[in-house]
Length: 302
Image (cartoon, rainbow, N blue to C red; front, side, top):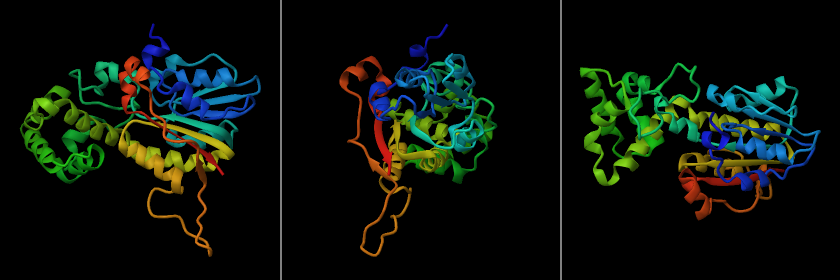
């Protein structure tokens, strides 16, 4: 049987839960349940009147559910947080925790296609019931959209060349597996930077497949509606695209532009940032290499 820690080693566990400033009788949400590490830590700090709702769209995560009457696990994407909390009668909450990105378990199961280490079918779906997978992105997207995916989500300057190469290769035969994709793009993968470039290519396709940026925006906007005044938001991100969105939303309450100023030149923003950016220490990175890129931001609703 897979243990919670094997399923997903929770990153910045104490710091992210500390950031919620938990009240024993409060209502909290863990939007990325995974192996349940963060949820268990939250429950350990709640009293008998407290309540925790957790979200995870991955069927595999259901095996880690917690037998506790204070706990509800919702098998849905957290972009629907407001709708499902309302369904369960929770219109407002005291704190929300999000540990973004791919779980250790998803990386470690070869057939899911998330990891650059294994050959697998082009999949990369966090929700295995979703229609869109990596195969469709690689084999069915036109050149303009492929270029957009690599440029916007992989931050790859050679996105046009990557897109053209894929289009030319798939005209001969479909690209079905991760190894076939690596073979097609071999000329862009010099040994020195092979792993870095591959990680950017995989990240770009994965973000597109799972609509991760759209999901994050929808989640952050709804979190503002759901949180009570002085409610806390604690979010761990793993790449600059996510972190920039989170940072900007905490600072301005919006993703683009600037908030409107009043007559005196002041502008009101919905959050106040709590403390500074938190990153894992060397000891945590040594135990869990995936923690190396983690960034934790904590905010309180005004």
